Image 1 (cartoon, rainbow, N blue to C red):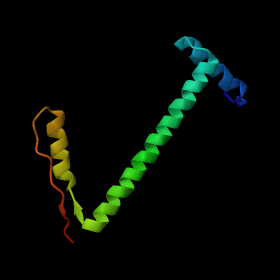
Image 2: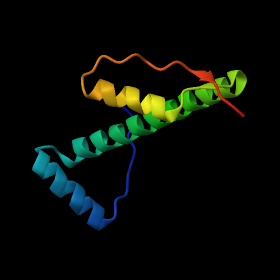
Image 3: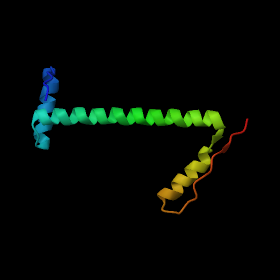
Length: 94
């Protein structure tokens, strides 16, 4: 495994050490976990944005969308445990 040096300001190093001790980890493993979590969040954000771009392109191409009121009602019913019929995308007006 290649080595990477990270220079931490003293205050951040103290915070990392303290947090690592509270979680029963070494500072090294705590830092690795934190970097992995940050990378995962960035990957999720990039995936979310890519999916949004695809959906927006589809909306522009077809002109079909689901009105927010219909989608909100569907989501609220699902959260409440009610068997709800998923709204269908329709051509938007105007």
